[in-house]
Image (cartoon, rainbow, N blue to C red; front, top):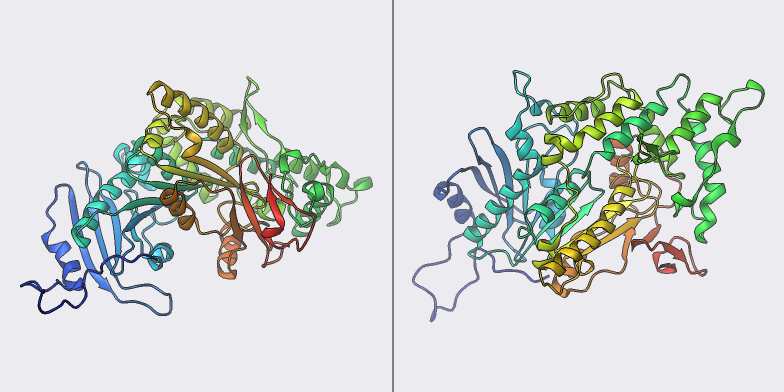
Length: 527
């Protein structure tokens, strides 16, 4: 790691020492708060945090403040500047409808020497599905708050963060990155589309960048709301086992993961209980219908897909999540409150037709203008030599991967057309890359390995100019795996803790080369 000059400096040669000694790091940190007088910003605290041998956290200057681009906005921000700096800064995304200012989220980057930037996106709610902030006391939309959340907060955080870094370290960051998944992935896509100069590299995982996620979640959850449609844990395991038996080996490796779920057409009808018998070793007619519906894509009156079905093979991670959803769930209530505040009709009776109708209406709404991040023109970002690494798990139960694949293809085509029109010789594929993760559910968890060093990948791409051709992922550590199960209700995966797999650039998938352990990524090639 290339370390920058620490703010404390090193001992100087007495024959060449300047008249003034370097300012101690703690004093420089405190001075940030007391001397800062830039408009529309207020620094509320600046303190030195000692190194922590237990967590590996380095000594850092932590700065908390608020940005007010208008009279009603109060965007909370937290910056952490390690004393031993690698001359780079990274913004970290949030999740759900909440921001993210936690130290534990910043820790991996801080340990590497990065300065970090985080924001609450303009509201103090930390529960991921809490959207009470989106509505004013009189019931009207909190328009400025919605704009802060939609796109303004991360940009304002970044502008101030670079300014503070220059003040603290005496120089601007050499490189600026952004990393996030889900809502954080959407924030990364917004940055590439709206603010192409903010970041040199962006890692956007499983981005919640359009309304398809809401429609998919709403319609799939309805499949299990039918009378007697929910499955027991043994029945979920039964369905998963049958799907794996039918399709697991299609990629050349029987490893507990269906690598090509789109190519699997297994029908749960074969598990129908005979003669009206019921039990854990078969499914009732209502349960068969629910599983078939959960697997199926949903279309509008024009035949366009507006919701994608669950991946066969994902049942241990996806079915428990959807069977826990109902009209009163925090996710449903939070999403619908947000959508209603953002100005398009939401269904109140949870009927399929109303969900699809509200999806069609969103294109003319405030929601589309402030939230959706589907502009395929990345030409300005490419001209700035930015790098955008998109990735998505193929077992994702919240946000289906198909919309991102469609966006990626369109972005390559449209961006190249715009670059040509601007007389630029650059190509979109030099700056934009999509990777898929087999067996991985939403951001983390599932049967497939989901943990990789995204910062190292994007930094190498930005610094070398050579795009990655494969990324090796491992299973999450036990504590992270337990967190995924707790948050998403996932059943324990059957694949081994030692499994590694390559993430491959779309449309390639990892293929077993026919030799060696099925647990080792080196025995798989991307093709």
